[in-house]
Image 1 (cartoon, rainbow, N blue to C red):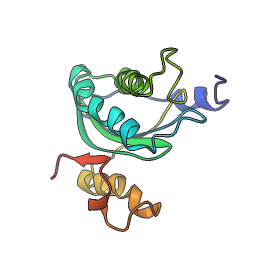
Image 2 (image 1 turned 60 degrees about the vertical axis):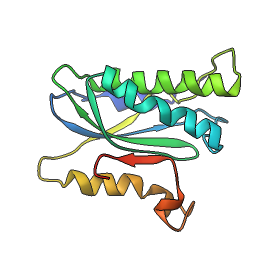
Image 3 (image 1 turned 135 degrees about the vertical axis):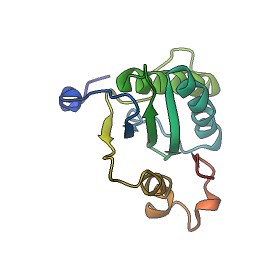
Length: 154
């Protein structure tokens, strides 16, 4: 797989701060849709166990047909890049298992986009923005009709 020419730029200035909340977005590799029920479920079921193992609190997430969003809060020993790498690695492994893909082809594009949430921002409002992606994209008319999201405020 070719690297996105801008993926190195995504890492410039990235820091991991204890207790910091981050909105992270990662795209599916070219030609790898998360649109089927089985494949989306495969991704979703790995998120919480992986986050716990990475010293990250997973506050909200949504799986879209070609990307995913996570709202993460780092713990004392959390590392943003390592946490996202673990989320992508574990979900890709489960995705490939469901698809019967023994070669383990890449499911995610390299790199990810992140935005640190400022202290004065309403974290719950950011979570609502994340989980409302299926509504804004026209996938559903009511969020209750879309099964591939969660937030700790439920």
